[in-house]
Image (cartoon, rainbow, N blue to C red; front, top):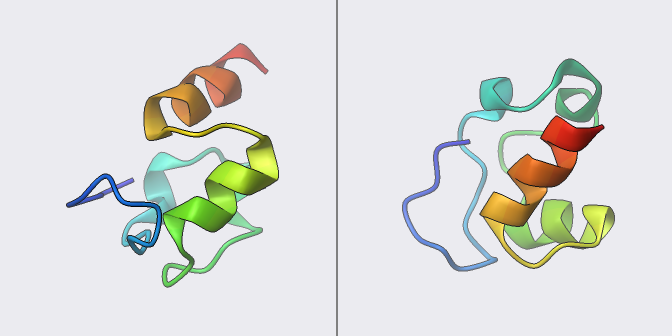
Length: 54
């Protein structure tokens, strides 16, 4: 994901960094906070770790 700020209202500009199954769920204008809430995490690094551990 290309994130310029760490705020949860930041838009996800590049979903290609996400795994394929996650990529299908979200558009590029989705808020980062939405993705984080859906996966039950609070930070982008936690999200990456959770996706990697799956």
